[in-house]
Image 1 (cartoon, one colour):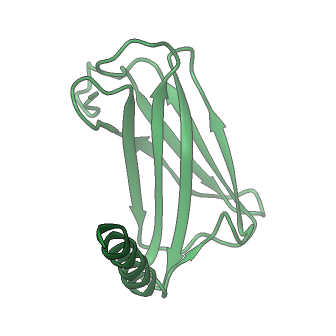
Image 2 (cartoon, helix red, strand yellow):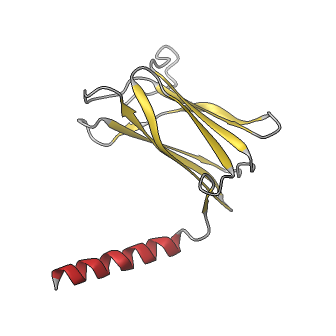
Length: 140
């Protein structure tokens, strides 16, 4: 009985959450966008997902330590979106957050008001050290 109720709950949950996001589309799955991840010596970029909707575009992903150590991953991410004609749609620095203080992973997200053009390239580069002098980057 427990198995049936938990299975039914999972099915209903998937149905409800799937219907809630029906207006957005995964641009990577549809091959509308190409993703280039450039890792550093300290971390790799995993699970990048680009979602487009009428409200704009969201880029989410995960940064993972290359080594077995836990704790903060120093640095920041550079995000660059290049249109098919070679012009730059977006270029900027992005911060990331650890799931908890002992985590090997950090998550990042970027919301844009504009939709990404079909055929664009999203390049995400991890820079190991932050620009601490200017104070514009907070490393977590």
